[in-house]
Length: 98
Image (spheres, rainbow, N blue to C red):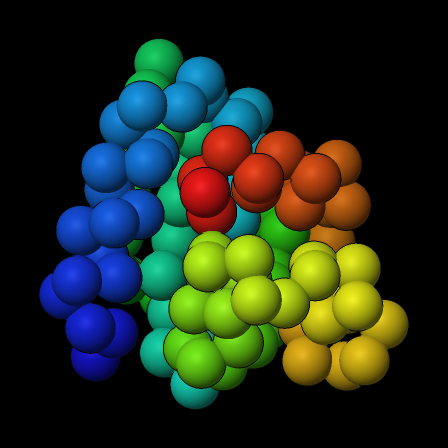
């Protein structure tokens, strides 16, 4: 299971951001977290399922991205973050990661 603190942080960020217009699945150390922004608000769930965009990384890398210790573009280019699906949705993540 993903750490409750991480889930709480995503819930808070998702609630304060405009709906992203799709679904994004994070696969963090083989555990799923889905942000569904298809409705009036973004919702966060730990249930695995299909998504428009899937981002695979480690929890450690995610924490470095959130703290600003790792540049997102460098993380992708270095293979620390893998993105599959709708790249437009991936670009909307900045509001949820900060």
